[in-house]
Image 1 (spheres, rainbow, N blue to C red):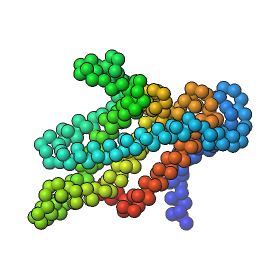
Image 2 (image 1 turned 180 degrees about the vertical axis):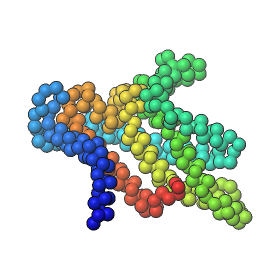
Image 3 (image 1 turned 30 degrees about the vertical axis):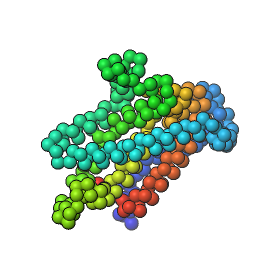
Length: 285
């Protein structure tokens, strides 16, 4: 009995912090979602009207489609680049230098990186455009804008994927590869039938991480494209920002927040089932 009280006493500070920074804000969001409120005027209780409005909000569903399209393009590219680069530099002389160089963009703040990209690649006055004569019309063409945000995200996050994949490659026993080569397997066959299957837990782990990166693409969109052109890069996070802090619909913004949470939980549950089916991510150790 005394041991239980000691355990509860030790856990109490953590529970207080968790409640203060997780539970209470969530309850506040649920409460605000039942109001019509601009943040300045007196809140007006509207019941479930904000939640009902989600169903018929075309802009919200378009932003969900944009978010899913962003994930559909960025996630496969993130996984492929992580694996291909990690395999290409495995065992080479400059492996550590290349990995450090690739990981460096992830250490720079998103704000600083986005400003640098804007100044370097702006099709009107960008330094890279002036020097090369090549310009991606991401400020005016919808598909180019989405591609530009995807490229920026990959530039920032691929280094992390390469490091994780490289660590997993080192964990694959050499004896397994040597045995396959002795049996007559080519290097391509070894990678295809030995290395890649053993990397599946790592790839699923990176899939989860990449999904988090994709769902956190708001900052890049805000600094680079502001959701444009023509709403082509208006992801869920940016739509939430527009609703709450540009149109000052804080009540409806809270309802959108709950919608984003449900989407995130749905994606996370699917990925959790995949991880459980593949036996987790023990390879990461």
